[in-house]
Image (cartoon, rainbow, N blue to C red; front, side, top):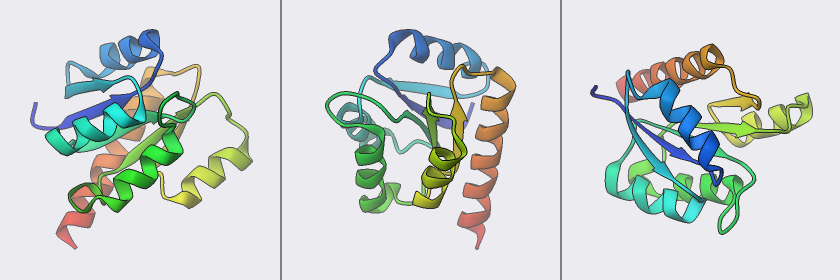
Length: 128
């Protein structure tokens, strides 16, 4: 378990579901909003971040922007989880720089595939 994933979501049930899907393969850290997620990301330097978009205190977009301004975290892949699955939302998030977009309700294989792609893209970025 050498890879760490930070999960950021204000919904306890969603955090539990994500953790159940991921805990066997990764070290999992959780946060209930973007502000808490930012603090944990700075402390732990995760390999991948998975964040909800709609949250109180600091939403997923503001969280994403804060991570990208933070030098040690700038290139950590970030996957958005959203209820808004329309193509326009998905494309907007990808154009912003999110590594992937997963729509709710969540399917385990979709999540695992997105994490694999994000980790592979991070590895290729480090090597280049």
